[in-house]
Image 1 (cartoon, one colour):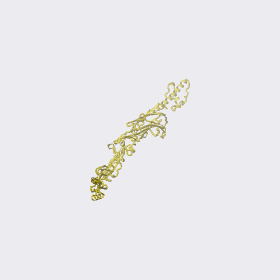
Image 2 (tube, one colour; image 1 turned 180 degrees about the horizontal axis):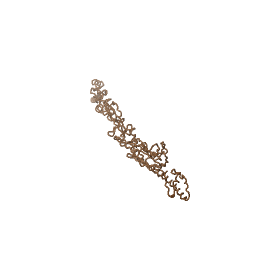
Image 3 (tube, helix red, strand yellow; image 1 turned 90 degrees about the vertical axis):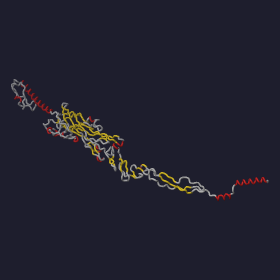
Image 4 (spheres, one colour; image 1 turned 45 degrees about the vertical axis):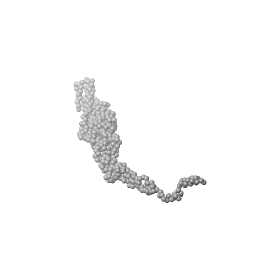
Length: 486
């Protein structure tokens, strides 16, 4: 090997040693001389702390953590915060409104967070209190302001008021100053809601016209008063064919209270009417009757449309009744007072409800008595003597069923009785005249013969005198005889 070659070999060997690095021993010695770095390590999070507010909208809570291992020998430090904060208790119970650290309560609750109930008040829609026993009602159920209230707000309680509700009392016509229990119905009304009429209509004028005896006889009279008032008509037709009755009545209560705000309107008047005519004996037993509804009450005098002014009824009723002494015709007038009331239903957007009154039927009777004797000449049937009739009652109010009536009618044709008497007299005179004529003719045919007595009682008339023939025999037999009353 040449020196030059050796030199090259040494250089290559040195390069290899350099590339191979220090020996294992060298490396071990170096490790013993240098400490490795330690990084930072966090410990676990602690528990959450208490909330800063019990309720409302601002409460928070916090938790922390500690460093478990600090960084060493150039280790990396801990990253992240050492504490955390989050919101808490941001609420209100039972619909309360949250503020910073409390709640404004609504409804029936109180306390900081509205978690305690107030002592309830029945039918209260808005209740408030600051503790459990000082509750106050701000608004009762069914409070519609100036349009009406179903309950009166007395602060610590709600008192049921008269109202439109079915479980209450509309109390009209009437007054209700202090709750539903204080309802007082107006005079003439009563029952639930004051919707029962307790007052009869007032019967005003009544007249009749009887037609009979084959349309030859007519009797007119007043039926404004009844036989109980000592007022009765009389007639002596043996056959009654029809009767015309005309009468009036009203129902107009006075001094009704002012309408409450939940009542829209009210209408009162005559709602039905009829006439009943009956044939009765002196024991008031009915042998025939006829009834007719007043045509003026059909469609116009109803509960929906009562006749609020003067009601007039005029009807003709066919009868065809044979009548005998001791019987009578009774006229019964029937009129019903009633009507309707319109209420606002405030719970249904003020819809209108129609309610009807329970009607009250008033009756008025008048009697027409058949009697062959004229008044004052005998005792009429039904135990009433016309000449003994009492003075018509005065001052009876419509509520008593005895309304003021016109004076007793004087148009009943008592002249019929005079006509009957005149007919009897004419019949007697005619009978005597016929007898005289018979005698005269017989006398003329026997002027030359001896007069003989005439036959007696040729007509069996009580006016005939047995001395008739002998009294009128004279030389002037041809002259008409003059009858002489016995």
